[in-house]
Image 1 (cartoon, one colour):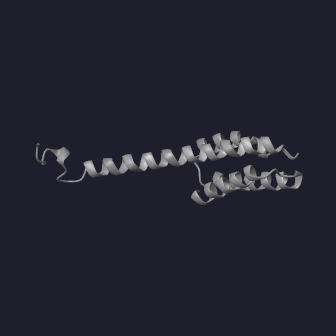
Image 2: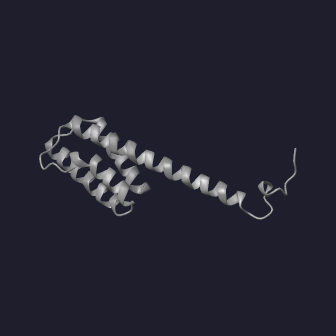
Image 3: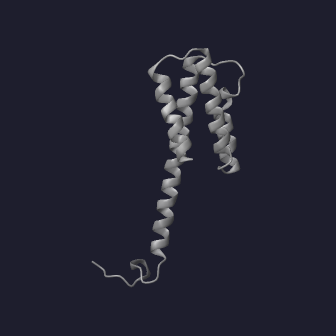
Length: 114
């Protein structure tokens, strides 16, 4: 998932740097659609539904405008960053919970009171 997020960020940067012709917009849309398809395989069903709603602009067979692509892509990048933030927070909380439940931890009453 990190690889896909980084690719989408790079594509967004490239798309912002220069206007895309119709062929470029079609290629970018199909690249983003493939990225969404790859992400769907790695996500929980609730997140897949959310991602599909975000990816609707990439499903239209007509080439989207440059601004439509930029907006949809920025929304996807923001969603991915939010997803990673949630994953990192969950992992941090799990690690904190595991350290509290270790034998001899200060929370069990065996620590030094300051």
